[in-house]
Length: 260
Image 1 (cartoon, rainbow, N blue to C red):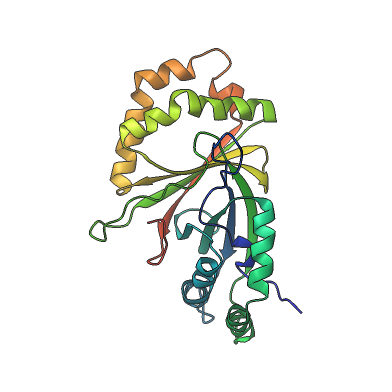
Image 2 (cartoon, rainbow, N blue to C red):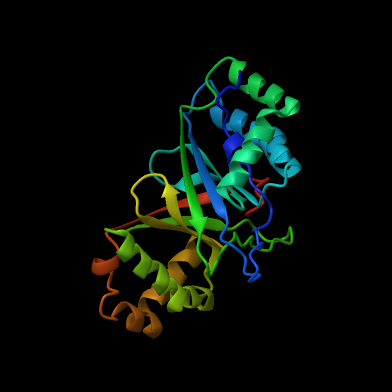
């Protein structure tokens, strides 16, 4: 009998498939799983983080998953929580890796130990699946030489009224908004549209910053940028026409996160 686990379904593959004859990489699929926690004698954050580091990440790497980003809430509602984001090439690959992890004796033993220990390991799980966009089909892991501090990451969600308005917003990024981000020093990590999850249709993307002060500085520059002003003033592309709600959370990577 297979018990419900924190990350078997979050397993993925390390690279994006490029099997089509065109040679163009196909957008990856990202699983984003959140484990909501509580502070208390259960020591949920410590126990779950240790389990992910010592059991889940090694198992994911064993089956070719990755990159794997693991974060805790920094500035966000509904904390404390741990969020894991894992990339794999397709939904079929997700199912295949899930099956392999559920059959992995070492991983099952570690999971059983986590779930059978006194006290709950988490309060609730929430899961969503995203598909990368053609112009950024895979996670871009920020370079880390071991000398710089870990980045602060922002996960932003742009909800749209319809799939048509969402497509316009996604195209805005391809047509110039993404280039503005990079020029101003924002660090794109992933972009994906949600295929299974809450508040659809929506676009979810992650940016990295050196620190909170750097985040404030680049967003102020973005708002004043003349290229952005021209793009957002294009008929049919104003926020009111393509975005119904914007929300964001700030995240801190755990020490073993591949995205940090």
